Length: 193
Image 1: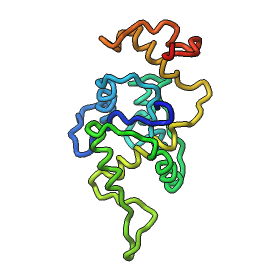
Image 2: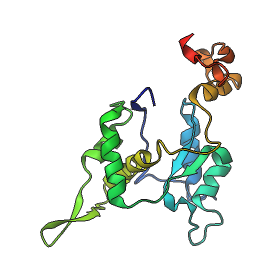
Image 3: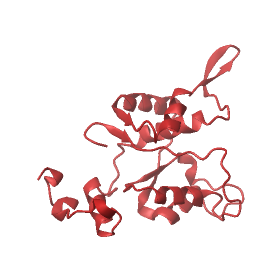
Image 4: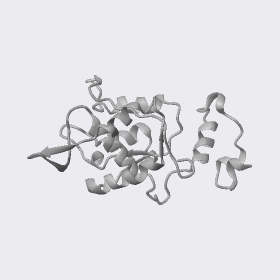
């Protein structure tokens, strides 16, 4: 988030992709590697509400697996809301969102192609799951809209704190510069100095 704008930097979806069948995490390792491969400094990873559920034959829930791969404090589960409440949240957030057209092309396609089922010639309240993945991408945006501003007690570090931590760990490469006290809440004016 920059000021009142939400910057969508990239979108990734792996529908119709071969994922290692021998992966003991059931494909979750694929997504963990994809997240770690990208050059971003992350705050929280927001998982859908059903990530808490264990599926038949799974030793750990999706949430537990992601926490093992990305760290226990870096993961949150989006609260379950009705579909209409989630869509309203998405409608409210969309005007303040700016998308990288290339890196978010698949996600933008999903938002443009979200459709409702037709029952007896009339649109229902349920999304159309047509196998093309539009619902998955639109759901991801809906989860973002629902959870983006949720207050977390003792929650995620601020952006400057995360950048300072990443710089100290050498994760910023050539972009590293001395952040001084700007990486903590102690430097109240932060980057404006």
